[in-house]
Image (cartoon, rainbow, N blue to C red; front, top):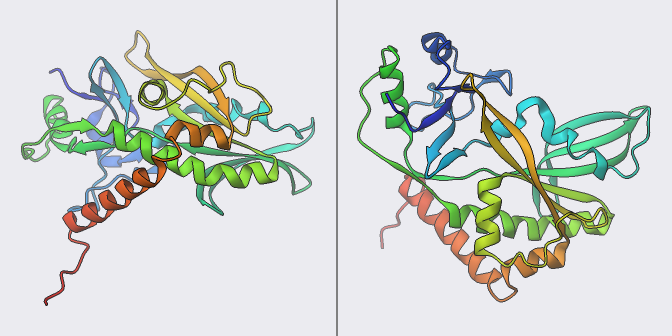
Length: 280
């Protein structure tokens, strides 16, 4: 059957050789070498496993871990380690807190255990609205896996809030990197970067990128081979600085964007039952 799920637990739904019963039973993420961290709120022991879905005219990545394929996103940042030298070691360090927020990964150039240079790397994929679960269940039933019938539901893409949120976060974090004269990279799928270029002020962003800029954008295309499997490829690189990120947002618009982000988070928490209503 035709399905809107492109990849499940890192395997293409178009690959006829996959043993889906074994894959779903293992619940493993190939890119992390451990259990998929995307679990159901109502059943936390069950991993959802949806990496990529079909939406509009293409395949859209909805899990940031999917961008870790082959660790190529880190290799594509080596040129931004301007103090890196032959003989240095390279380390990928996840989840590091800095002034302005957490950074998903640092790529560090080290020698004898001492850090000589580093690049901060943020990953952003599309947030969904609704639920992909029914599509997941219907696909598994179609390939002979015994799973419960799904409740009805659909999903969409939260393009606007995803783009706004990451730009505001970049605006906060890039100031730290500029102060240290270091680079920061946002890794996205090309679909998301195209949306950002269309909806925000990107006319001043340098393409090709300038090595001297602190903020770099790396956009990846997502192509399907004849065997049905998917692969990432670096499609576009751009760059700017902290002032350029502020210009993307519009200086007067930033406060309104942050207010909208906070309001959305509060409403989401209330919807999830994580708020206590006071009796007056």
